[in-house]
Length: 346
Image (cartoon, rainbow, N blue to C red; front, side, top):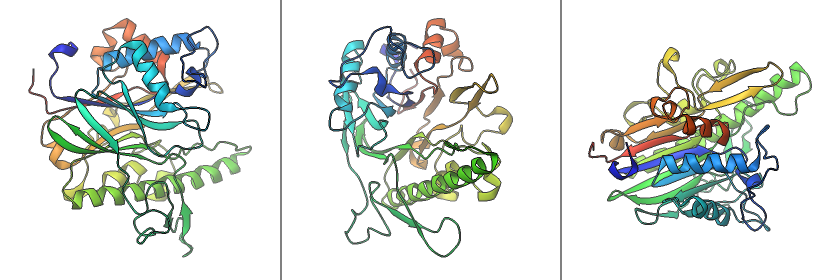
């Protein structure tokens, strides 16, 4: 289906591996033959691939995970808007929430002609009343992670981006997420790998409990909510899930009448799709995982939305376009996920 014939609103989430490494400090693209931060891929090749993917998405708004850095010497919004101009994207206006120290921001790139968007963080600031029970995402959350009756203090290294969005004649809430990785980085022995992996999963679960508390607040106000991003987790992803009972994704989804809807998360294991692809050098094989999700509140699920994972081999439309399929493999180790809302079926 060509962009001119599509109706409704298209939202996307896309984790772009080391997007930051494709820009200089002034936010200009480094379109050259130097190596990108992606293995064996030049900056010019990754930039060209990303341009093709973003153009094909033709989204009204893209939640960019691992967006370019915002710090004293760099501006991620400037970089994103430079990228959008370079490829003539509709989604050409950038929005960032709370900047972090990881060089991997969460940002929204959107079309100002079709949607309006503003950063609208919820919760209480540090020091304010209710800050302990309902903290803002740039604050701290207190929870007993190891059942020793002594609550730990949890922080987001990448605070979620909360957006008040008006699109398709509707007021929507978006929360962009990049949850804690459970990978045992820094481990030197099998025992230390296990210890770090369990500690990271505790932190990831705590972040998801915090996020679910925010979801419940929006539901209590009757707001239409979309939670989207990279959860670094999924149902049945690893053996440690049995220790915790539920994956972080299942925590955020919730249950019963207030359960968020994300069909990819609830697919049977044999039919479960994947959204990421990593090369394991020590095993010389590819690992694919379902890490990226778009979750919606029941009211939005009742409008017949359409989800799509732009997997270059498993998505028929992407696979039928060899140039796009190659671009998806070159651009990032994650693939975009889109949600089409309020479509008239044309």
